[in-house]
Length: 220
Image (cartoon, rainbow, N blue to C red; front, top):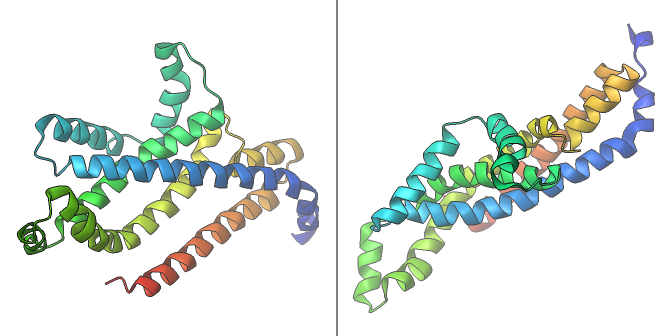
């Protein structure tokens, strides 16, 4: 069985896999940063007393959470240009997919964390003469953010793995490069195993960093 596989030959394809890894990390980082901003906005929208803001936030969250990320990717890359008349690059589309998808899940994380803060904290802030925004900024948000870290870490890891689905819209990320190499050189076992190891290294590294952050901030 060992003679059928050429594990040493994987070294020859490391430049291509490295390119895929670069795009995986690029799309993940930019997409998740934008996703966090969207999540913070729409998460606060879910607890807003403004009915319009609440309604828009609820629709966004329910639609995105209720549809598969693969369908979202295909719709954004193939259907959206037919509506807007603008053809976007696959990498741009990939970033939008990760941002929009992760944003919906992060919004629920933000909502849950903010609502977990005791109402007495808010009342104490208002009794000290702070405005609602100041109370949120200086009292509620710092405490809520610490509670967001574990679920945010899980969502970041999920979103990084979701980038593998972007190969369907021709994003040259890690899985796309692996499929291209395997189809051309018929070395699926070696290449897909290497791709899996790459993802494992990324997720384990991120998990370790998040545990260190949780420990440093003494997250309960």
